[in-house]
Length: 302
Image 1 (cartoon, helix red, strand yellow):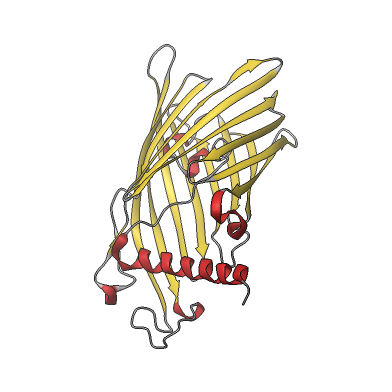
Image 2 (cartoon, one colour):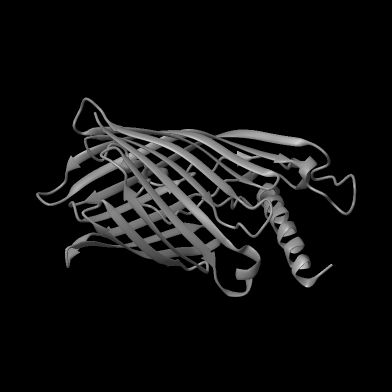
């Protein structure tokens, strides 16, 4: 086997090892990270539900490692809307994240309370409740030793409740969103035979953006931070430039060692389309390859 093929094989096995670690009690199942946070904010921040007077529908698809067979694939469909009360908004999302033999899926509902905090600032407080399902298909894993006590040839699945909470502070140009996900710390007993339950760790996420105009263009620097114990905090920084918010381009970098660039367009009064191309840097760049992220947005007045 060629050295490059060996590396690919090692990466495939690394995905399996990561799945086993998730089920073996480490509890560090990391939620997907987006490079297009302004296009589907509700996926990470429940306080973004009903942030304006419009109904928003977003379809998000993410494939980060195209160079690795059975690499993660994320799909999410989200809906947010105001209510009859000007101070309340709601949202719902269904999503799945598939990586080789493992699958994580969920459905969440969120409610946000909006208020005029000061003459300048609007404050939104949000919370979400939902259900998450974790599955591992042992039939998809080829092990050197048959009859492995951890997986065998079985399909294992378990569902657990989930909750999230957060806040969003905005003055129309500057926006700060902070949220905590998986706050219940639910146990995921998929691999009871290897030493007990795996508990979900809380995700702490923050996003800061500021839009200003210069030279006939809109400029929006964006900073995101995500922390999940015991993984070190990860940050990403990007810059988005738009023309009357009808066309936009952006580029950025993640501390995990990945760059990205992309563009978007408003197709009509209701439809928007955004695309980002991601690529790994460093020693794993050749192995992981590039990735793709797409958001299709649909907006209508309520």
